[in-house]
Length: 179
Image (cartoon, rainbow, N blue to C red; front, side, top):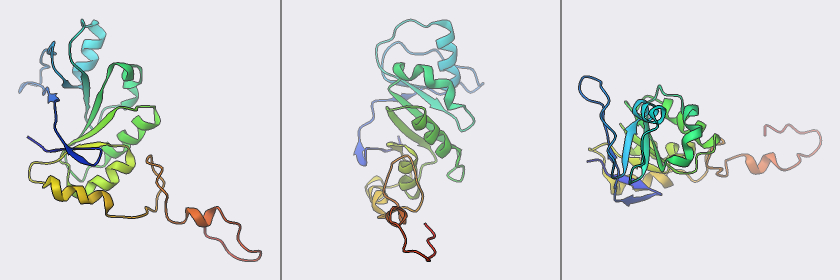
């Protein structure tokens, strides 16, 4: 089971991931417990008007899913997970940014091929929870959040970035200002 880092701390994980069957079919949505279900199953259950469950709802987005389709369901979800099939696939970063821009305030979890070296950047895009790949050491992964003191690029996390202080000052006359 992957180790969960949430809000920059190692944390217990009460969520269970409901995976599609080997033949690609969708399983039944359990009536109790905290479950993360594939987006396709969530859409199917939503369309059928599935009855009330006890437990919290979570949705797993693949890197090909459109996060805008979840906007109307934000109030029914406690967690959105985004799968990284390979650490080199960056579409999950874009999905996280889009979800935060759309107003998602709940837990946003990176799952799949999640490595220590990605955590700082994933946080900047809006992730606040990470299910590390099994071979990753969670304790040493916590140091990733302090790898950099000031980023260069603007991001969802509103961190102060290098050059932003210079951009707010008025340059002296007849000088070039790259900011």
